[in-house]
Image 1 (cartoon, rainbow, N blue to C red):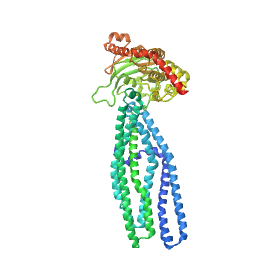
Image 2: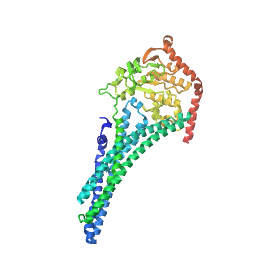
Image 3: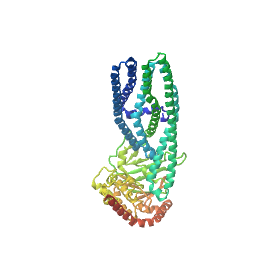
Image 4: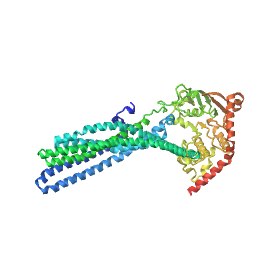
Amino acid sequence: MSAERLSTGRALARLLPFVRPALPRLIGGIVAGLLAGLVALAIPQVLQVLVDSALQEGDSSAVLPAVLVIVGLGVFEAVAILVRRWLVLTPNTRVEASMRNALYAKLQALPVAFHDRWPSGQLLSRAVSDLNLIRRWLAFGVVLLVVNGVTVIVGAVLLFGINPLLGAVFLASALPIWIVAMRFEKRYSRAARRSQDQAGDLATAVEESVHGIRVLKAFGRGPHALRKFERQAEELYGTEMEKARAIAFIWRWLTLIPDGTLAVCLVVGAVLAAQGALTPGELVAFFATATVLRFPIESIGFLLAFTLDARNATDRYFEVLSEPVTISDPEDPENIADPRGRLEFRGTRFRYPDAAAGTPDLLDGVDLVLEPGETVALVGLTGSGKSTLTALPSRLYEVTGGAVVLDGVDVRRLRLAELRRHIAMAFEDATLFSDTVRENVLLGSEDRSEETLAEALEVAQAHFAYELPDGVETVIGEEGLSLSGGQRQRLALARAVAAKPSVLILDDPLSALDVETEELVEAALRRVLASTTALVVAHRPSTVMLADRVAVLEDGRITAVGRHSELLATNEHYRFVISSLEDDDELDDEDARDAESGERDGDRDETSRRAEVSA
């Protein structure tokens, strides 16, 4: 059953597996809260005895003991409240941490297709604000809900016991309060869910603007982005005001109804006291008890809103947690005893999950074999599916037909950890983490020695790493944006090389390099690729020269495979693709000439700048 169809109670009950370790202390906190509430209700009963006996009879000697009893009860109530808070705060922080860890683990397990369609801001708001709200509800909301509910019930029984007529008048106010609460729940729940989703959209907008700040500034689109952000913020503001009006609605009635009820009770009580049907002590005890019940009754609005917010946060959390993990380890995995790096595409088909019905598969039966130690360049027009094909061997996406086979084993029959130990990738869009150069380069390497690090940096011509203020221990900025594009690509390439895989997949990882650096990297790659199977997506004619063979991807299929010279002589489509790549290179010639010296100057300038900042 979907989260939308669950009742609030059943929706929140899904938190039980996470809350179970904290249940003993949570129950202890509820018990402590109940003791505090019951003690508060006991004080009016002491007042009744004091008024009807000592004060009415003029016995002043009984006043001091009664006062001491009341003071003792007050101290006990304060201690019970302190114990309640102590019991519930720490364990619920651990609950929040375990839920956040479970969410992060789920995000790591979910396929790339999930992350393609989910905005990062929505995921971030679920991992931070929603879980923070759930923690606060578990620590205070659910405790006060139980404590105040029981306090109201016990208090109502005491009021009825003091005088059945007054008790009945007081309890009569429960019906309109219940009606108001039902209307409030329907009205507030929709607005609360919409508000949380809009907050996630707003977080996405902030994240995109921060990551794209260079583009916004370069094109002077900061004011445009601000106007778009303001529109989203106004929508959230409107929803928050809708929530505020709903809360004001219930608070109005939760104030008027109890106050009106007390006014009626005061008139009835005065008449009963005048008739002798009610003693002064009973009248004092009744209104003192009603005063104690005032906060529990008024808190209904706050607790209802809090509970509905927690329910929506829980729904949003489990929306992610209930997403199916479509790419996982097989139940009965196979192993590759002797990894050689033979990679084979057998009638491989693929279409994206959100592709429109009736559209052809992006990959429509790809057949290609890469022999151990062979380098194959993959060429094709933009949008032909080259990058998608390179994502299938490591199961970043799952094939929708056919198979990808590594050393005779279908990659779906291998554990993901083993598969990704044999296959490493370097992407055109180099992604780095806010960590040291060392950790970024050795991210996928089991051998974390200095020799492995030095060799990987040497192959990628990333010598600039040693010239940073702290050398390879320098912490680079978020996503490596403090480095140049060429520097980021070289570190990403070094990361793939350091993994020492059987199969190396390179999705145009040299596009941001200047001509001279590219030549040095290609020369070093030839040494590495001599013993490693490689599939290289080529966007430059120079990249094709790295390959032993070239495969042409056209209309979702491999239409030709051969040496560069052979294909130039025999394949018209290949000539067209290569001429397109050469045209692109010619357009970039001027940039390449500048980059030939500029990239190195940039490295030196960057190193100098970092040294100055460090100093």
